[in-house]
Image (tube, rainbow, N blue to C red; front, side, top):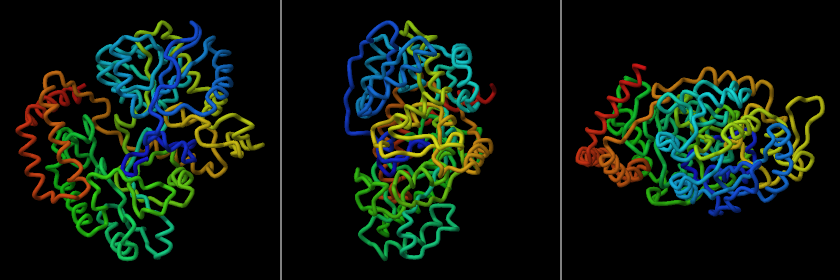
Length: 488
């Protein structure tokens, strides 16, 4: 997992490094098995990632439960992280007959008619699971007023945090109590760098994005943003925003001081969670991370984090792990029924996410919903929680207390909802300009966000290049569609 990428939906079941590979891309980039169904009573699902080593044993247990409830079995075909987008594009465009898939390019493919309309099917054939979804999941996945995905109920909100390697905080007696912004971390960065000049103080690299209280209509690879602390009815250029410019200046100052690796703009160097090669990293956390509990479990050492953005329910979070039913499927109702079963049956889901009961884990007597991990709990012998099923019905280890669960649920209720939740920008009128803007941003993003270049010199060049690429036309079209969205 690259340290500068978001931790995607880490949940209560993601406690070992093997599970963490779900968010960064495993090394196996292949399709496991044939794409053909074995019989008419078996549904075909495409899933992203690596096939568990004990897949047959896991699915033998799972399919007994699925078949008992729905009358069908499930055949999951895995496609590696590096190949998924390309292969699913071919599968969708060719009209191949499949039943369920982890959604790729959700909005454009839904608009093309590739996915079945679940607006009525989900509440009818997956009622228990559907009723447990936060409203943000529904709103964030509506496309032209219709629902085309069944989302995994997990980290419905997220916030950005600076995560500190506690061994170094303790070693040099450093306090992080007052850190609420990037700038607040400068003092401890300076001290640490003086003590350990050969260890990455702020461990970032290519693809890193400096963060703030913004949300993005089409993702933060583009300059279009809504300032959550400003006029949320207006779409702005994030790189013209004063607060974000201050962040970029801070990054540049840190780069010049040596706190950021000198090759950050071009480097894919890994900084493992469990290692001692870093002092601060940027992570994304949500309610099912239980503070730093899950991150520390994954690292095998104590980590502590300080949040610096607002907890936000956004479209990105709502679409983090979507499952879609193909419009080519001859078993649409059964497919929804199976998704409903996975997301509402605790015995079924926990057997997939934790592994085989009695081998990988066992229930703790007289403690409802609590389990103990056994020696048989190993990496790649279970499915990751973030993209398998409803995290709310997952059993938890004894380290997750009732108070932590209560705090989790309260934090979900209190989290802010993005003003652009559910807004889908239709690019048909500005396709050429969008392509031009993407090319421009690819030239500037890494240099600016890693602090490698001076933002006061570089941002004016970026703005000029964007204007030449057609930025104003795209902004006008986006604002027009956003205004219409707000009226509804």
